[in-house]
Image 1 (cartoon, rainbow, N blue to C red):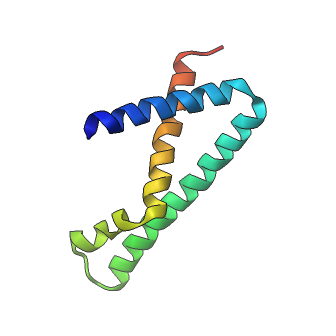
Image 2: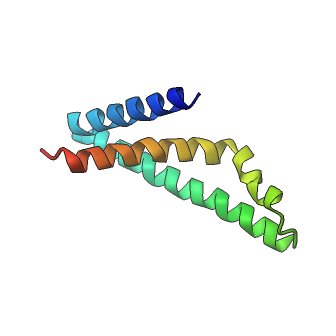
Length: 94
C-alpha cells in the first residue's frame, strides 16, 4: 500500500510540475486550486479542534474525527502533490 501511495504522490507531483510549466493559464488554475484546498484543509482542521474544545471533550479520538472528512482528505492529498511539484520546480528551474 505504501508503494502505491508513494507512486501516486510522485506521479501526481510530476504531472502538476509538467502542467505548471506547460501553460501559464494552467499554472494559475493549479495555484488557485491549491489556495482553495489550503483554505478548506485548515478550516476543517480548525472546526474539528474548535468542536472538541467547545464540547469540553479533549479526547484524541474526537480530534481525529477530522480524518473521516472527505474534504480534509482530498485537500490534504492535493496539497501533498502540489507542494512536491513546487519543490521540484525549485530544484529544476528554467
